[in-house]
Length: 403
Image (cartoon, rainbow, N blue to C red; front, side):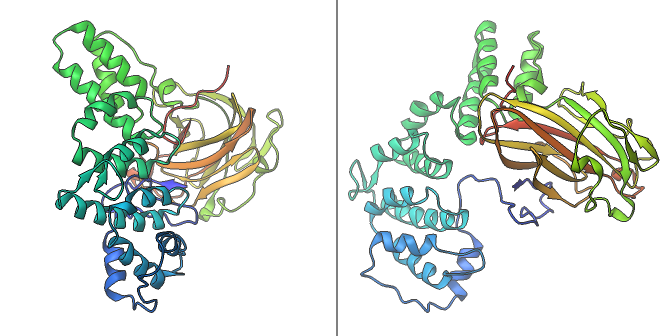
């Protein structure tokens, strides 16, 4: 699961197994520097080791430190390689762990920077930064985002015209970073245009590729000023139709771990015993423009309580997707009866796409069940009990339910 931090004062690392930072271009920072300074090189540098062997040592790094000495030595040796190693390093990032990608990227950037400063720019591997080959990597949408972004970063350093040549065609790119660049260009072009019809067309085109909240807001505001209304909930793919039941007891915050009847079976016609008597499933449709379901007006005595929400999402085809959840409360999520993730934390804050949970959907109907817990706190800032859920692809683009 990806967890997005709330502020510079909150750690970006989530506390539960499976959490990860949203990927972009990985950098080698203080962690690697500390390792290089303080890790004894019990594995001596092997000048005869092949490049694939050096890469394999780095890719074998374990999350608990397995293989670190060998990896440190391998990273140092890789960084001393010539530009002929650049493309193999990009290839090696495919399927590697985020930690290994970080180290491989560090070696690549060291080599590329040395080649660039030496003025060694060429089209063939071995004669400098291979611009033509890097461009092929950038344009290969079957690759993961990180090597493509690294290749693009170094490509534009040796071929500045590549930015204008490539970015306009990336409005529908599977990488959110490339798509953001394309949207940025369209917004700038609209700002520079003196023609009303052209600006409107550029704003609409930009919105078709925009998934980041800040860019969408800019475009929606522009379109609104031009008399065009945008259905934000649909654009982002928020789920609006739910059945809700509650409240159930969360005294002492013990309800998070307790199994209540809605977790066992969900017959929407059968009443259940709740915290203060009989409760039943009630349909609810969110009218919030960003799909928020506010539970406080729905359930009385909401402190020390929890509630369940269930919906059926119809997928056009089976395959990977992401559930993107926003809530300031403790929560659990099940998909088709399987618990996919949970977080027992209250009032840390909330933000757009706060939690990103990879899931696999089946073709047709998929049941999504939420458990949303509120605690006993009485401070004004703790009086929030809500959730927002949307379904997207891996880049954050909405996957709308099948008709």
